[in-house]
Length: 223
Image (cartoon, rainbow, N blue to C red):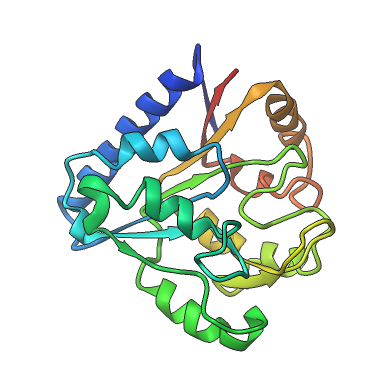
């Protein structure tokens, strides 16, 4: 694991966008397509703004969320809206978005469809993850109903997940997919998440799911 500390968030977003663009450009030299998995939430928005302007062959890039709430993509709680509005725009508008949502009342009903869609992006070329104060990442939450299944080395690429306090079901990339990514970045800001990161380094993946990728990740932190 590598930790990079920045003086402020603006500097972090600019620097990280340059790093990710460089990794993708390098991989595009020898791979027909590359994949970029990104988190939802509000934190990565400025990163997406910077990355969307990168001069890349975006038409050869698959973009997908690391996890998704099981709501239609026009719902304000869907991660798809943020990704489409702030990442897949400008130069990056040529990228192909791979949705983790398929219209159905429960994720189990269309999981095979979603899994097949995502298969073309695996293994992930570049993975960007966030982390919550509870040390969750993607939708791998402490106390979630299928956390142990998702952490297993035999887990399928995607699993539904229901967690205490989450108002709707979610779907998430599982531990084998996250661990197989060729480049992994974890983006955190503020003192609360810095403290959570320090705790996660001393915890099991069951208690701190983000620990499953810490060994291979570059962690980027700004106050």
